[in-house]
Image 1 (cartoon, rainbow, N blue to C red):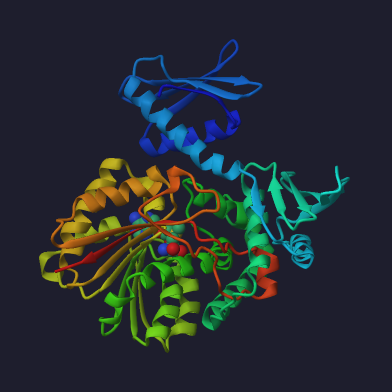
Image 2 (cartoon, protein in one colour):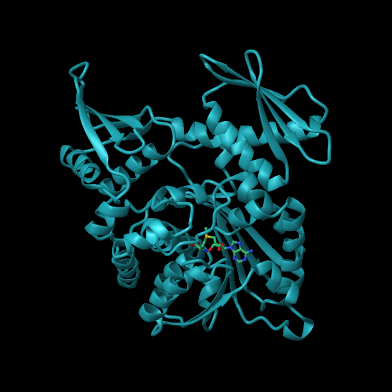
Length: 476
Ligand SMILES: C[S@@+](CC[C@H](N)C(=O)[O-])C[C@H]1O[C@@H](n2cnc3c(N)ncnc32)[C@H](O)[C@@H]1O
């Protein structure tokens, strides 16, 4: 497939994504405006890749059929195809059925209450067009000016439509939570840790924010979003770091809890849960596992490795809140250096649960495919082979082929069949597209944890699980 016609995406979005992609691949992208189209060239020591982009009324047409490097063009076109696959899903209308009037009002109230200090929403009433429509509202992000439509019908159907990226997800997230509120489980330590992060977040000195050289300019939420959408940025400032858990922890913790529950019989046989988390960041996986372990009454020891020492402050909070339940150790190291420094003498690894949670998608931004593959080979040869019998290895990450799943599959391909059992999972979306199917589906996607109102209104924490995962059981 060397051309794509009338795709519903704007030029700047494609150009930005291609630029990130080229940086990750060590290419230099150059944009040149021609008569009636824009040419993107991708330079390296090889012949350049070439794409021609035509802006039409129906969308963007991309032609990758010319130039001197058809292989690179093909790779670029495949990458664009991936972006569209994800985007198409975002563009679909989100429907909620059987929404009571009270719930509808609850959703609107939540939307109006939300403010994280950067973003808040304006709600505008539009005239309804027929008797079936009860309310038509336009929700606008006051800062970014992005907007969407929200229609509520007399039969209880709620439609959210007419949005491109972030806003739709944020509003749908609010709706999911209001509608799912009856299934709320209290996970006290989780809320205590998040409370402590929130305290640090809101008392962060504005002066420090001005002086800080992190390129977020105080916009923590969009900075984090950029990282998670694939930009090469690190979690490099304290304010950003304190924003992470309130926004992401409920979802990420529940994802890992669910994945491990699927292997609970194996886990029940462990005397204790000895976790090694690579790229642990603020340990969202530990927060989910602690909930699981309190159900099965197993002690936990946890070793987290992360290259970013900034997480230390969050680690102190976690230590303070969880030290009675978990033996915790943190190592601030790049996993690439760590793997290359392992010597045969040290090869007795006690961990029976090895986790990579949302790390592969981060690693991939900084390393070439060859480097990632060679890392995976060392990981297998130097670590996984030395894990105890029955150990579980989990990769949980965004449901994206190039950003995570291809690497999962590469790792799985290294494992001898008789020694390892491979399971693939994905959390089922509301609108199912083939692109997102990865092994077995997990139907329970809504996070059931109770979230305090002040956290809800400030962060709108993510509450729908969407990841893809590779879970490997070590047979012997
Ligand atoms: C998206 S965060 C995920 C954190 C955590 N596992 C979670 O699920 O919330 C990715 C983390 O991986 C860490 N990381 C990325 N590359 C790494 C590397 N080469 N070695 C160690 N940590 C790394 C980053 O510093 C970051 O904390």
